Image 1 (cartoon, helix red, strand yellow):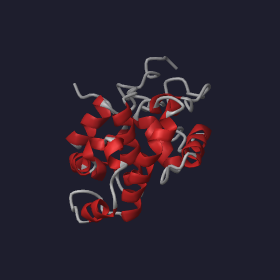
Image 2: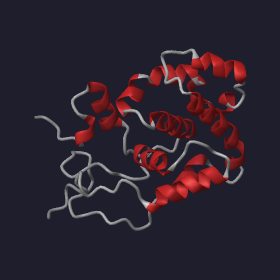
Image 3: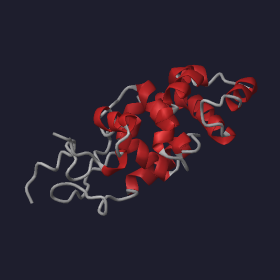
Image 4: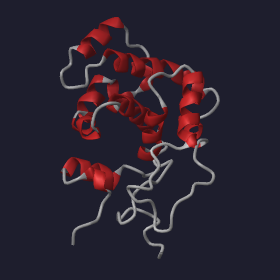
Amino acid sequence: MKLERCFWCGEDPLYMAYHDTEWGQVNRDERHLFEMLSLELFQSGLSWLTILRKREAFRKAFAGFAWQEIATFGSEKIEELMADSAIVRNRKKIEAVIQNARQMPGLLQVGSFADFLWQFEPKERQIPIGGHTRASLPLLIPEAHQLSCALKARGFSFCGPMVCMSLMQAVGILNDHLRGCYLCPYSQVSE
């Protein structure tokens, strides 16, 4: 029996595995959260499948997304990353990951990265009976804009509302699996 999934993961095994085992599932691990923020900003303007295919190369290039180590990257490392054809070679995005890593200590003085992110979980969100359809799923919610503003106020960069919305979906702050998907918690509700 074929499992019904969200339309966006298509038939690619890597994409389906990401959908089935990671996307939309709550993850509060600090390193994973920083990785996802970084990958989401790299994805901006590209397909997520492109990023997934390069994920292991990103992990290698960015010290397993250990933000403490990334914060020490200087100009020589930036040039090394710009020469690495296994990752997305966009100077502004590379510099943004390093900038964001350097902002983590200040953010963590007020609590964990997970607690910071989860404070933007919508308190009340209108979910149609049976869950969202492709047409009814909002592209942005106010909380994604609020998260973006809060990160920027703390010195983070390349974290606009769309990056934040995608991050919220990826790490389980939002469960936006669509109606009919076997992972949609609202699909069990009869209409």
